[in-house]
Length: 210
Image: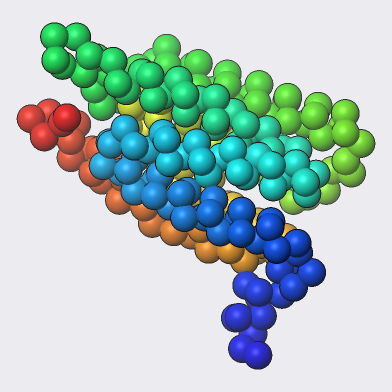
């Protein structure tokens, strides 16, 4: 078989069929969620919830606590973001696309550090041997955590963080043998770049907003 197909399919040869189906569903809804996010469409949250809830279960089964924690957080933050994005006052959305101010940058950095510390503690609590890939996972967990919070508040900088963490995650998941997830994050990277450009255009031309 073609080495490329082997890379994507070999990890699934001995994997239970129901997990493969769940991963495929999460793949589809994950891509849909980022497409909606790029358009600043509130459907980013219901589609994202489907993907993250399924992924929480998959990572729990695989005992990948850092990844599981992040997706659990995504699920919670999706509920908050769904509510926050839908708020209106006199038929005008309360939360427009904007840039972070100094206070929000400091809060974001604090979240980044706190998330890495908590993720490390969780790994140790579950007795997981922490290797180099786990340390990368701990770092990206902090970046993703902050990106999700920025997105829930429609901050342009969320896309910068998604791009950074997605680029790191592509080879990380490839190294772990997760061809489908690696491909997904490659697609996420492209969509995140497009999302940044679209939100920046919206920011420069408020008349195009919702």
